[in-house]
Length: 54
Image 1 (cartoon, rainbow, N blue to C red):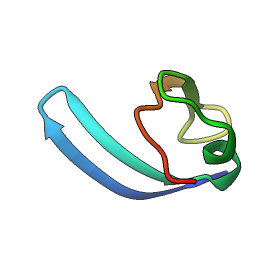
Image 2: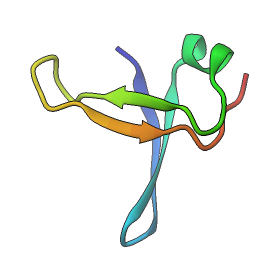
Image 3: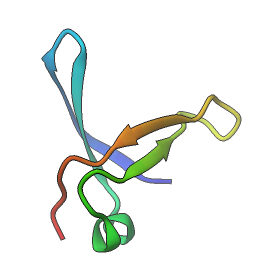
Image 4: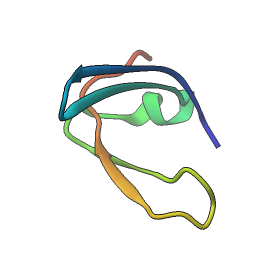
């Protein structure tokens, strides 16, 4: 499981999440998706990768 280190509302419909996930950042490309779940059995939410730090 990865940790959300920053959450910022950019406008009423867009929220920026900064997640500490070095293994994902190592292979990520802009435009790809990650799947986020709050808990193991919760709904899966696809999010677009807009940027990353390697």
